[in-house]
Length: 529
Image (cartoon, rainbow, N blue to C red):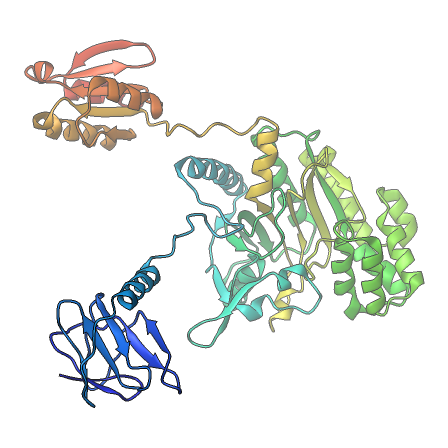
């Protein structure tokens, strides 16, 4: 049949069905490139791996030869001869192009795989967080990990805006993996504001994504514990959230000597800047720069402040105020009648009533890096200073207004999973999760008795036992090794001799005791255990 090449030449193909090589000619007609992809024309041509392109140096007319005698003849006529060396080279090149690139088996940089052992650790941590949140009367919620990009685009110079995993989807929409949960929560509240009973007390465990430089305890994805209160103007909301944080610390074995919580109010810094003549529209951007003081050289921060239009006098005053670590000294700086300091005093007073005042430390340098915070802010830290911030949060009363809604008082915190895990391991407070800790293992001696083993497992699961039913037949030595691996307390084996009497073998592995009993007796034995 006739076949046309991309260059317009027509060939007569004899006995061919798959095209693997294409002849591409230069304008001079003396060069040939071999590509490992098919060509299509008036008919679909076939060139097997042992077919090679052959050409006459003085002509643009190509033809293909096969060692077994199959030939392609150009429509212009002429018979070609086989070119063995060319054939070998073409085959080698085709094979090299068909070799599959070796897959990178590592997860993307900055992310993690969660094997069963890792999942047990994560479930343990989430369990502690959930226990605290529910004990404080909070309800769980969630939102999509993919959000509209506009939700995070703010103009205060925040790092989070520059660290988005953002892209255009197939519908032409600008979207982003969420870098934090609070904007999603604000969107949800705004969409159903009139139908939600206030105050809201919600918690979640979002996975967040930021393309940032990785350090100890900082990855490009992490899970975090969020707790937020909406609709409460007074600092009772902050006091309750700080109580939840310290309750978690106590529950996992940390003390006030191990960790603390730095507390400040953006309102106090705002009062000072207002007194110095700094306009309100520059306040959020100034706070973002202040938050970078521990990460960047002071000269670089001062240069950025100058770009904002802040004078040397204002910059020096800001730097001086940030060194204050005592509430009484801060009172001298902003005045006795400061509303911001009044809130801080109330907070410390409530902390005494709650019983966690010794965990709190006043620190004027804490302003947090997100532009939407408006009042009290706080940040968990380890007393030895070996880790970055453990958790952080604050009041954000004006966030809904930035989305076009009516402002609503709100306060919340985020508590990442990475730093706390590192801290607990360094203190020897993280349990071991190597074993699955499955209480009961059930096995059958042979295939005939497997249905009985399945019945035993089902009846034990029905009474609430976690049971590992071995799905294939193993020797006794292998079963015992498996019980050790999963830290089983009991082993139930269905064996021929005992089953003749409708009994199974029950072994208490901790006490090293063995007995025979019916399935009904076994169920009764493990009921409530």
